[in-house]
Image 1: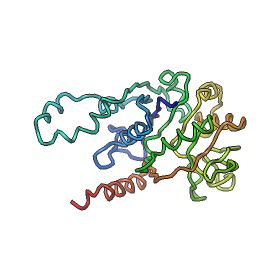
Image 2: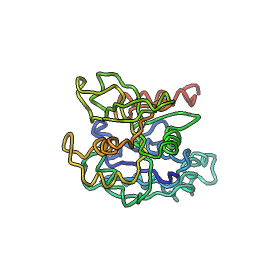
Image 3: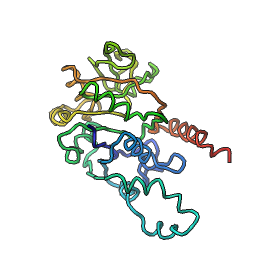
Length: 278
């Protein structure tokens, strides 16, 4: 039922300057693969092969990465190193990539709205590449799609966060769905609240399944915190109609939008791959 995945990838990555002056933050590597490739692989493992990417100025390397490189391929085709391109070549051959530019940086909601021409009138997944998630058995997006097929409304991924960090997340409140331990019917959400105003410690992470009416809501929503169009404000409109489910996901998440989270992710995947043992 979910055929397309939207990747907002137009941000400046200011916390990683000066590296991100020339390299998009989505292309920062975790071992040998850029963050965005991990997200694309997660989408593909959920049965999605149509990737819609919202980019901005200075992001051409994203398009180049998900395209053939005849010079490198020709150089390696008869060498012992040709296997290095196997993973990305499989992605290029199996998936379709479309692109649109976000002309102004006006928040995640605006970035998602900018992707409307690529999505059309159908439900779709959203992956924020700098939220790197790992579950070797059932990817986070797979879990989200399973929830969508059950509830047929917008789905957001959540996890418990420390109370002293709620101002870094969209925070939800809700009631457990009858018979479930991890699914909440959302009744409120606040973008980056102060600790005293936070309705819970359940923070939204960068995984969504959105129904297409979200685009019409985003077109009419007023700018919120920091003058940005917030996806949480649009989702709240849906939540007031009982049409948003928040799911505690199974897996490990790294906030690779922060230097600390990025380093933790590198260490985790290095240990998991055994590269440190060689």
